[in-house]
Image (cartoon, one colour):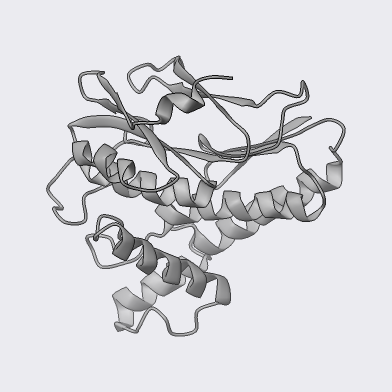
Length: 254
């Protein structure tokens, strides 16, 4: 059974093997995404992150003052990711405010997946804006087949299929939302040398945060992923030429 809602400005798609599917499971997972959106959306005037940014703009107050536990956790994970990526992941925007969306999406998908697992669900996918957490098998008993989109096509053309069961898959690029990812080390770098990079990791939180950083690195991002234990990646440059990590092809066989 598959259900979809538009939350956080993007399609949220949850698919649960029919034998395990119950409506209350979908409801609880979707409600969690709505909670995350209400707290972390930089587009909502009533969100906690907007209140934090307003404090910074108006009163120059410390960001950590009065933070909720979830907000503290996201800031903590963001700082950890910044260190692990040599500064290529940074939630501080050019104007000095905070935008944690590069981490929150993968983090929220992972947490929604944990909600399903805690209810005993073993076979499912949770997707938000093309980033996916997989678990178990599909209703046919096969590993989940995930498509990598052609960044140059507006028709959602699939150029590569990968087969996963338990991994997370995240794609970073500016081809859908425009230039929303930037190089924290060079604010003038428009990252035009690559079009997208897809990362497979042990879970969607890990895959998503490192995919964002790898994209910000430009063509060097694929080499960063190559050095990470337990991760593989598929990069498409501005000319449509693909480069993949050493063991990526292990995921292209069913």
